[in-house]
Length: 262
Image (cartoon, rainbow, N blue to C red; front, side):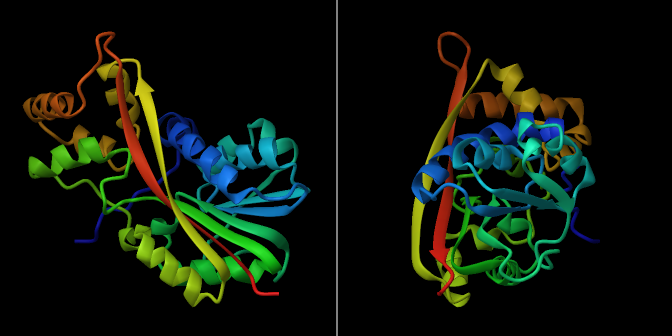
């Protein structure tokens, strides 16, 4: 039987579930990139535009193109203030709909593990960026416990349930990212870890928001009610609340950047 695929079609749900995490990480990522103003950017796998919004707010770009395979996500992205400048179109990370050298910087935010052939995706980033341009990504540490949904996923797996995972989680390893960037002929390659923390109002808030994830919601919906209660008890034990009932925990991403040779 084919492995279930994770589909991101609801931009509003994604914003609550992952968009906030993406913004927290993206702020640090952009501080690290420290790009000059006025660049031409492409945001590959832009989803609902969470990171694209940061680019427009912080980098004064002359152009931003967001590309994603999901019409539902793109529809949400087009409602953002960033759409006054950013353009959003449907496209494939492994076959970008732009000529060579169209941009000064290409970014993937939390995307690479969903690209069936990560090396081809990186090659496409390089193709559409001109000489001296920037190629960068950040991706949750999917194999090292850095994914924001891990506290629930780990307890589900301990109970014998297997929510779908991205097809290329291996591409989230720092060594794998470095190999991809070096293999694409990029120069001045640098890496770093990004750690962020998020606070939920209480357990119900955390539970409701995380179950908007297309990898978790359907799996939990298929469980028996007693199994769901057991899972919630296990997650509560893993993520204890403070005296006000709030729950705070962290996530970790791997980031990499390099330049196209001149």
